[in-house]
Amino acid sequence: DQQVKQNSPSLSVQEGRISILNCDYTNSMFDYFLWYKKYPAEGPTFLISISSIKDKNEDGRFTVFLNKSAKHLSLHIVPSQPGDSAVYFCAASAVYGNKLVFGAGTILRVKS
Amino acid sequence: KAGVTQTPRYLIKTRGQQVTLSCSPISGHRSVSWYQQTPGQGLQFLFEYFSETQRNKGNFPGRFSGRQFSNSRSEMNVSTLELGDSALYLCASSLRLDRDNEQFFGPGTRLTVL
Image (cartoon, rainbow over all chains, first blue to last red; front, top):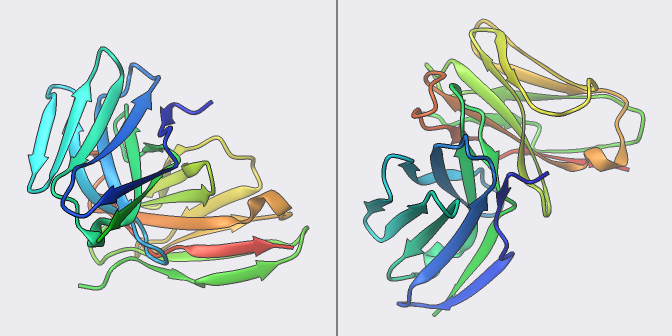
């Protein structure tokens, strides 16, 4: 029972264009969402987060949008750069503590 | 400041054996969480420790266990290994338990069960 789903296993984007990574969740108790980026042979690194009291959070080239009614969030990267090529994980949290529920990940390839 | 370190980085075992993985958190971090990453499943939460106490546990069989020492270092143990236990095991540390606290991940231990 996957409570957090990333339905696109991979995405290919041209350098300079926008990358949009999507994530859906089923547990209505989730109220804190995060995106992590993972390069090969390294652990995931935190990218950006959003609380359910907001519908948008920006950090430089990265923006996360949250649509609570649709139980959907997305990560926008503008402009995309070759160094952004990595696996992106969406994660969600519902309770006190650090337990995160992760999606399966989306491989992003940015072509130069 | 040194990051999260995990040892060993790679491990090959056979079915039925047991294995112990180690995680050293960032200095000063008291919370350690463990995750299993397999292709197509993403990261699945195993357990979380804070001040030597298990605070949270995921849906894994009892063959998976862990502990945390007084210096916050943590170990996880898997007994009676099965082929399906082949995965990347990731450890993450954070300063405190609250979820607004960023988790820092180690590079992982790649376990292969033959």
